Every structure is written in C-alpha cells, then in structure tokens.
Image (cartoon, rainbow, N blue to C red; front, side):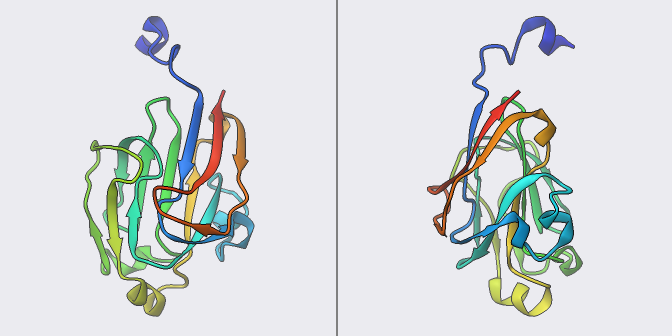
Length: 166
C-alpha cells in the first residue's frame, strides 16, 4: 500500500534484461527434460546445458530465496521481476551435495556476481540432467517477454531475455 501511495515504482524502468547465469549451450524451454519447466507451468524462460559449474546473477536486484538444498536460487529485481535459477533437473534430491552457495537471502547482487558453484560431474552421475532452467516466475506481471535467439551463452555477458513489466 505504501508503495502505491508514495510511488516507489513510478519512476522505475519497466524494462529488464536477463543475462545468462551459466556458461553453456542455450536450450529452448520446451526442450528442458522436465514437464513442469517445458510446459511453462512455473513461467517463461530458457535452459542452459552448462559447460562449467559456476552460476552468476542474471539480473540486478536482491537474493529473494536460497533453497536449503542449494539447487535453486530466487532473485527479485528492484522493479519486481522474479527470476528463478534452477541448477539441473531432479537435483533437490541431492540435499545440497555438490553445491556451494556464496550468497544469502537479502543480499544485493549485480549481473555477473557469483551465486553458486556446482559439480557438473556429480550432478551428471546423480541427477536426471545438468540442464539448468532460468524462469520468470511472475510472468503475469509482464507486458512482454522476448527470448532472444542464442546458441552459445557466456555467464554474465550473454543477454537472453528482454522483459517489459506491466
């Protein structure tokens, strides 16, 4: 209510660029080997077939949620866009093994800041896939989402999605 009264978001840009949080190959959301992500049940986004085990922030904002199992991290931009970075498929069952977290909930991050390190080989051997979804979890707050054509992604440098908030 106070935000509406005092107009905190009024002068804020409604445009958000989402960069790749991981170096690797671009994967269309429909090709992620998990129906929850592939059928966009959690929102619009894309996947990455990682070539290295480092996750950096894809947006500027705050760390909204660090999952206790370290397999996923939720971020929120200052203008309200919510982005989930989920490392691998069926990795919650690993109970944090193979992951090292470098941030906590409430931390402010910029594009390219180190968030999580993970062991690709361990995930390959113990989970369904290393393909890592990057999902906009509040797509209902967006006016438009443009996923840019990409193949090879570089963490913190390759812009993958242009979002305009409503």
